[in-house]
Amino acid sequence: MIGVSMDLEPFGRVVKQALTTPSTLQYPEEKETLTDTFRGVHKLDMKTCISCRACERICPNKTITMVEVQTEKGPKVMPEINLERCLFCALCEEVCPTECLVLTKDHDFEAYDRRALDKRPEDLK
Image (cartoon, rainbow, N blue to C red):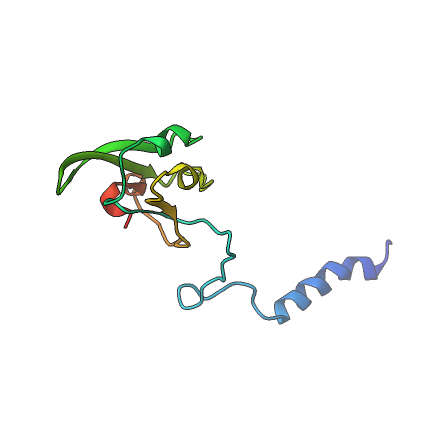
């Protein structure tokens, strides 16, 4: 017989953990505090985008594709971002010459259909 104390040790840890306060948040009422370096969903300022394609070229995961959008000044190509494949590395933000594409702290994005994770330029506001 090995010893009763060794057999009860895991049980004691479980009881101790069960009696402490929960470590999960009651989402969406309680939200996690985010660090300054957190990167979430992209935001695009369509008025300052110059269609340079720098964000598309630098994306390591080929997440960004340029699509045609109708603007006040006529058709223009702007980034469409697939959030399902995005690494949130912020290279697109760093390379943007007009700083029109930035990563926000917004991390609330979910979808029942994968196609909903393809965000057109109009959706990146």
